[in-house]
Image (tube, rainbow, N blue to C red; front, side):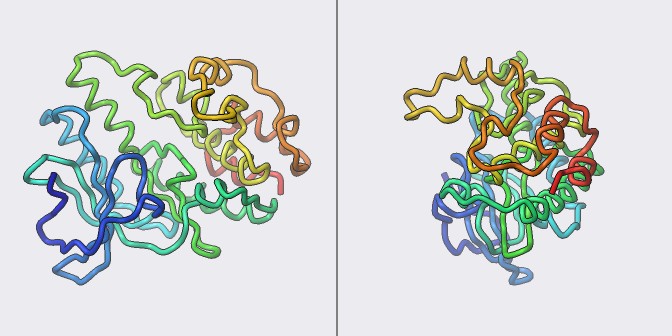
Length: 280
């Protein structure tokens, strides 16, 4: 496996704790030889051979992201495949900060005003992504906080990976092939076509976690990883949704329960509406 790309000089492979190091997909700090620009080369591990159609999808997906120049999305600069191993990669600006997930994992909670400020910026990023026909599956590990500045860098690559696998298998990818994360929405687990209302549900789950200091889904809090039951988790996502205040030891803002339940039920039309109506 040669994680090198023509036109870039590798500086170092980023440690697992770095904001751009996620799952099993390596990230490398590099310098663009033509401009001297400091970048991150993000490589997507292949789990199956890539057909020509899958490669075309990948390039189109990243190129749509490259056209976005908004303050809360990490600028994407380049895309391609490694010559030796045919690994998909893209280059983006190296921005400072810490992953929101890292702070939440340490038990950090956020005041309502700070939560609202973060949600506002994430909603702006998600709205811009929708204009480029991208379905931004928001995860706290794909959010970087740098002081008051918030960056998102999720471009739907995980969804592309499932499509690429399904094309090779000749079958639709089932939920069993999804990377299970605890910020997944009921609509995502059902596998329904992505809608702008899904963005509101993602924002609601993130906002609850920032305020309450825990995931909304109870089954996410198994005593140990060995206690986690994926069937129980899926049943919880597909079952009745409980008011979030019942699951929070922290007092939530007045009206948060109704806002949250509306977001998860698909009654809030978009990320922008979710941010505008968030109780603060």
